[in-house]
Structures are given as structure tokens and as C-alpha cells.
Image 1 (spheres, rainbow, N blue to C red):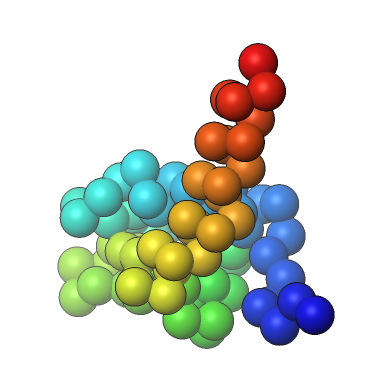
Image 2 (cartoon, helix red, strand yellow):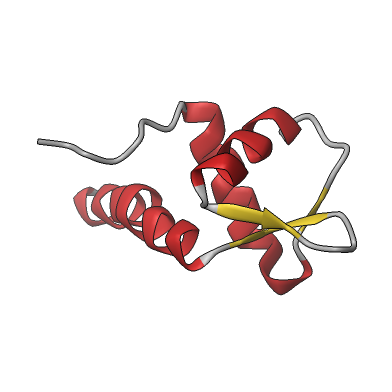
Length: 78
């Protein structure tokens, strides 16, 4: 049984954008703030003192499970 909280497609996209931002983080004030704030409550991202969202270890694990896994699978089928 799946015990992880469900991530809407918009939240999965926001999580991927945070991963692409790397250590610099993703700034607040963008259209994906509601998703990033939801993922902050879930523990997948945190907001730095500079007001930028960065991924937590739990977020990196979820990104690998849910986003990278699908990307690798899709590439192997082509």
C-alpha cells in the first residue's frame, strides 16, 4: 500500500524546478508558491533565511522515487 502523501502534478513539477535550482534555491513570489508551501508542510522543501525554497533530504528522496524514476523509464522505452 502506498503510504506517501499524494503529490499533485503541479507539485511534482514544482519539486523538479526546485531540484533544477540546486543549492541556490527557488525564489519566493513565483506562481508555484502554493505548491512549494504545501511541500514545505510535508517536509520536502524548506525556505531559507534569504526567502528561497531548497530541497530537504526527504524531498531529494521523493524526487528520485517519483520524478527521476519516471524520466529514466520513459527514456528507456524510446
